[in-house]
Image (cartoon, rainbow, N blue to C red; front, side):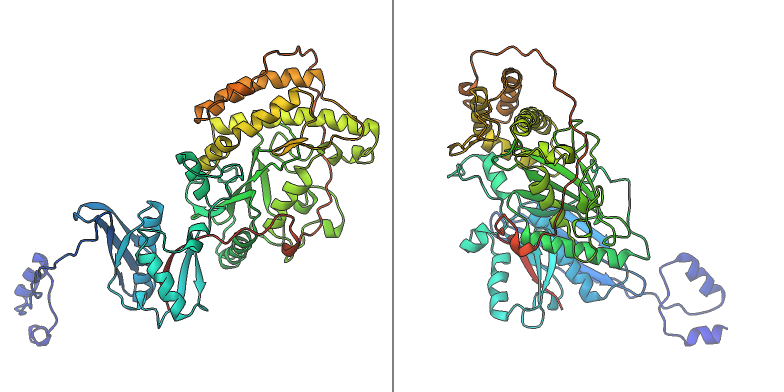
Length: 513
């Protein structure tokens, strides 16, 4: 054994135990080659810039990547390290670079110097594009080298806006009345993306449910990613969506109430869950009701009654169709078919009364109650905005506060609910119905607390909308209507009522194989 052991050229370890064992058998040990320290000059980034050095390693059993961020004074800013399982060395290096860009984007570091050991990660002629759009990475293999160089310059040098197109992509549409964005709150509103990937799921209604199994992981993730792409491309400008990095089966959407309806200027939030057998069954949708029933189809317990969700009866074409129906259709159906101008007629028993004097009079009274509940929803939302939508909630109500208060003043003056719009008063219904004294008195009582909430977020000059004389209310609000049916026809993406929004801003671009 000593003879055989002395024939090997393999290195021993630093272990004292191994050294003693080899010595006891008269085996000559070959100590490891000592570590050689070499001085490396670290080049700092430009002033106000950030530099990230990334690295990765891959073995037969695992792979990992990491990176360190420093400023131009070499001061440590933050770092990351992540085990990504089995993968190639190139993928590990690419993953580290992508992580670095995502972290820089989340911290709004606009001038990033990314340094990686792999030439292939940043070699345009060989590699196609990997594009980060609204927090999602997409493969852009069709991009040409010339385009790649241009976009890559945008990535490396983001100190100033180098392209007018790049400035406008991916930003929320600011209400037309806000011609200049000088306030910080409105700037945040303008930069709030319509679609984005976020992390915090803690207040999601379906956070305790989980769809993914070993059997459906790949197929379900692929289908949900297809839904994401449709939403990114076709979301109307009045719907905003957030999906979750660690929970692809969850989604949250907010719909802005349309002008000309009792829901105008309101924010209505919906939590969505994709079941394990999706898309063969529709998604589960929960309305954040705050305990209020402001629509026959939106229960105070959050239940959403819609034939497209198979939560109400309907013909085959009105129900969920696997491979045809999409999450986008669900959101647009809620916006157009539920949150409409006359929700009273959503109730099947009353639909036939539409256009009659009695039916229209009851519809007007229902709109009065609905607008009061919408105002209460506004106040609750400002006090406790859903997670990941805080900036949208504050900016939205900051920008629309005066319009909402002007509507309240007009309604107290006799204008029918939903008939006061930004350009003035629309034509009233032919029956000439007027708002009830009870509604005017109730509305007066809610304007003051609403003004208080607006002032908390910095809105000024609200007092001018306060009515000097309240009216006396004597009757309670009747119990809301029961569930209803809606005929949810299949909506084609090319025929949506709302115009297509611009694609989300291409924040960063990298190369990959």
